Length: 454
Image (cartoon, rainbow, N blue to C red; front, side, top):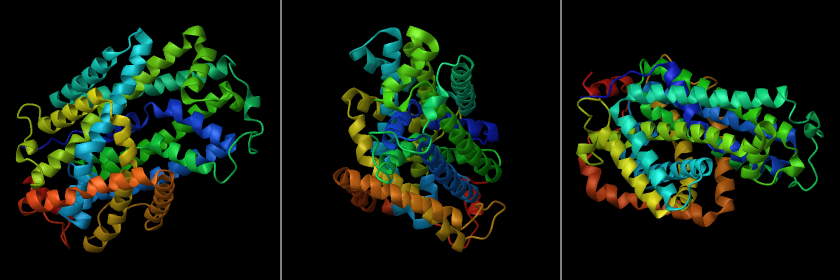
């Protein structure tokens, strides 16, 4: 039994927007604004990162059109470099990064729920684990239910952000003088160009995750049309939302009063909603994080499903639920690992160690587009602006890798080292069990159809 193709452009676009826009939009603008000290340069960083994400999304769109199967980056790396490199990507996702980021979001959700309803301590861990298990159950029951809930949460999230913007300007709760000087840096800001480093990293974190939605390509209707459009549209919407939301925050809170992300959001909330502003913002953040958590538990397990189908993970994980047509066992694995990490409280360390190698794999995936194009024939969709689009994306990825590696070389090295430990595991346990090899001159779409029995 195979996965059903049931996601259209609106559903996939909602997944992109819903997963990307999480707690980051309420926290990162503060650090970026404090570092840059200029509304103009803050705008430039958002636009630059938006262009980077859009160029990457266009490349992933073509990769999804060429290999429209569940697994996203895992599938594209397999087709470009072979099963070994793809296994290392899946190894990193399965063991550490995917459950780690899921645990971090669940813990963040629990902390805001705790603030909103007045609970603390060990109860927060139960809330975090309970939210993971509940959302995992929703995704097991069916993709249609999960995507419908995601569209509702995304609409609610965007409506809340729009309400903040409208209230800010209608109530005249801020001042346009906060944008003056517009270009010149405020006193106490980090000097340029050094100020760009933390701002770019912060913006990248805020945009992070758009590439994960391609893992649902095996369940998209007409994927060669749906995935490229939805990825590009979703990233464009996110860019506009981030620019507008940052502008509203700066309109409400002058740069000289910006201290941290939490206080930035709390100050804005108090100006808009009075003494209860903090709690109102907490519920908005809860909705935002719920959408991201739902998207993660929907998209990420498709990698484990694809690995098992290819023979580089336990075969039973490739089985689809007979009633719901979802990779239920893969979803359960991610939920279980994430719950263990929540209980241990180690999610921040895990994410810190694997950000560098995650960016490295994303860059490697886009680089694979050049290899795949040389071997495979042209298709109906091709990356707009090729080859400049992937070159631009890879140039910005290289800058990010330098910034991340230079900021904490030990963390970067440890992350790469742990991924490298997957090499002997692959060679000893899975190399001979691999059922797929990268395609050569054959059309990737034909390869995918043959693999699914279609």
